[in-house]
Every structure is written in C-alpha cells, then in structure tokens.
Length: 132
Image 1: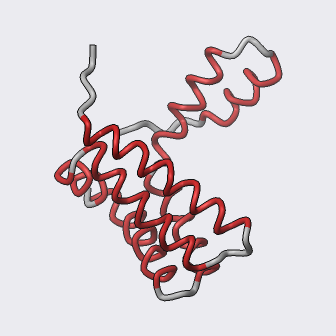
Image 2: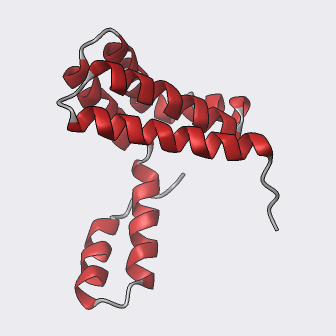
C-alpha cells in the first residue's frame, strides 16, 4: 500500500485549485489574473505532489526541453498579461510534454471500455508512440 504524506495531500488540493482557476479564467474570456493564479497553483501543487527534484528532472529532460520551454514560456506570457497567446503556448507545450502519456491513457481506456464505439475510438487515438 502506498503511503501519502500530508504534503502530497496539500499538493493534490493545490493542483485541483490550480486547474479550477485555469478553467474559470478561460470561461471568463481569458482573465489574466485567474489564469496566472491557476498556473502558479498548478505548478506549486505538482511540486508538492512529486517533489522538487522529480519536478525539475521531469521538465528538464533533454527530449522534453521543447515542450518545457513552450509550457513555461506560456506561463511567463500569461504572467505578463497576454493570456490568449500564453494559453496557446502552454497548450502546445503541455501536449509536447505529455504526448507519450496520451497513448498509454488511450490504450488503457480502450482496453477497459466495454462500449464498442469508444473502444474503437480509443484504439485509433492510441497511436504508436511509447513512453520512453
């Protein structure tokens, strides 16, 4: 059984609030203050969940530098009050950072789904890229 520390519990809450503020900022026509606050909460929560060393090692791997630069550049652009451009950069960076995870997630959802249409859809979206 995996033990969850108090810091990790706080990190889950902080990440959840970060995602909430990002979505709320997008619903309010890209309000730059809410988006910036959401970005800071999300990154802080991620650091609390997996630790600072693992966070830095995840973002600054050699093959993920392109995604990291776009994601963190988007955060900076949002903080400079250019929310639409910043969110576009963040979205592109997010997909570059987690593109290996998406194929695994779609494969898992396709294998566990008993609904025929969703199973076929997830198998098509799964692709061939690996986590490594």
